[in-house]
Length: 292
Image: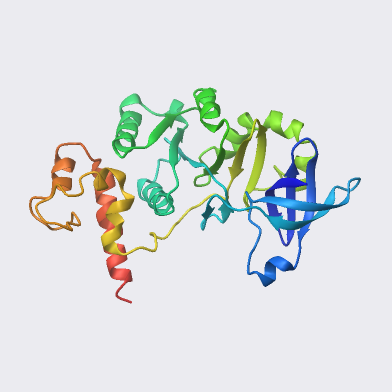
């Protein structure tokens, strides 16, 4: 029987099997010998121990399409990064750190700014322009007003999406608007994985039907810059990488060099000022880190 791991806690794995429900499973010792650990998002084969009690053993892990390091999940098609447009104000430094991390793992990110009912148009338009110039799809929504939720659902359809963002931005409220039908469809998933009893501390996946899954990950409040060389950082800012080869000097890192196409693009408004400032900040951080 094939299913998808939707949550794992302390050696127990909750495996969603289509048209069956959630099986509570243990992983066979063979995985430890292979130095493999089942991850949320893994498609697995299970050996059913009791249909009545919905228990089983994981006997095989299907080949992974991809694997993220932070959060530790597998087989993700895209990440929906949720920040509040206001209350709290978006921390662009934190957002850019997360985007760099996703770019370094070759993961597509969609930006979703919630609470747009609390902010003036010119403020939100600056946010939208900055990240659209960077090449990202940007959604402006309000869970409170139910505005933009259908657009979110359309982008989730047929994909496995990781939902990520800091605490307090309305992620749980967004999930509650998207997931209710799926919770009913998958039976006792709420009781089994204790949804709603605490803030998310573990990654967990919800089946929305039609091969559509939404993975909720713990809120992040701080992220280290990616484990890359300072010269590689430019590849993880899409709007900066776009100008590769157009600077006066080959190998330009767009910091102190003259006749730099990236710095000119910032002056012309074709690269967001905050994005470039964060690029410089991360560059210095990596440079200083490598000294120690």
